Image (cartoon, rainbow over all chains, first blue to last red):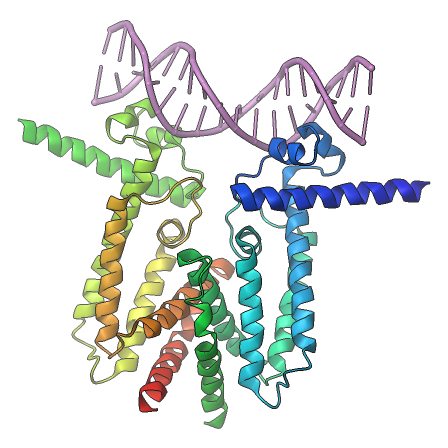
Length: 199
Length: 199
DNA sequence: GTCTATAGACGGATAGAC
DNA sequence: GTCTATCCGTCTATAGAC
């Protein structure tokens, strides 16, 4: 019996988080309020406290879920059988970047919550933060497949791809102007690494 | 006599904007309130309306001032006699980037106001926006000095350098981890451009 | 030109009835 | 578990006295 209660409670929590994403999409991540959120799931604001301790806890749940989604995307990228990193590193890299950029563009509020600090007075709890560590580790694995494992190289890489995403989303959220530079960016990066190890 | 009045009014406006920067530095850009700001200049909140029409107008003034400061920095970069772009394009580029990154790191609130959208429900007025256009034009001039004038090339460049700044400020606001990649980034970019025009 | 007083709105969170 | 009622705080902006 306890089981049943816990399950329903967990489902309602999921419903609330899903509703929160809908509202974030509609009104903006920062404009999310407990009153609106409660109305979206057919409740009144105080009832939400039966499922979350605070508004920050809701952002935490959204943050953790977002990183689990990213980890899932990265799993498929890592397991992609149509591309062999050893055979064509450039195609491997570019394909992964394109999927990551698509993930970012797919939801601006999600992008903001994961990668920027737009929510005032909130930062992920240690618990929620752990999910992001995992996805970062997957990115390292993915880069290692093309022989990139040096910390400085990875820093250069993160600057490059996060710059592409930031520019694309800031200037042209639904466009492809920076996304279409993915091939050039990947090639440029690999050339630099190659030239480096050669010398 | 009218002149005197206008001058003092203009000075008080400047004082208010300077106080706003101090508070943004102390409490965060988003936490700026009219009460705090008025107190910082020895007034009460309503008195500010004698100098600015709204809080948004104050952000506008800060925004425009920030871009004027950046334009000033870029002027000195462009006029630097110790570096000749034709002679050593890489040194020219890297030096400029380092100065731009130093400008960004010098004030995080200023960086946020200029390059991110952290302030809810505010965007620069067309008037304030004009100042940012000017500084973008200067960046184009500066890149043109090393033969980079194609729009796609410039997009790749902005992604690269804005990524460096974003990563540095997000992960290590006072550090140099990404700043120290400036040389590599500039070299990498120039190599890519060269390889491109060669083929 | 600056003040006091306050309008008017919105927000997170809590108490306690049912 | 959900509700109503409400606390308590925040903020921008305006009205009107001095």
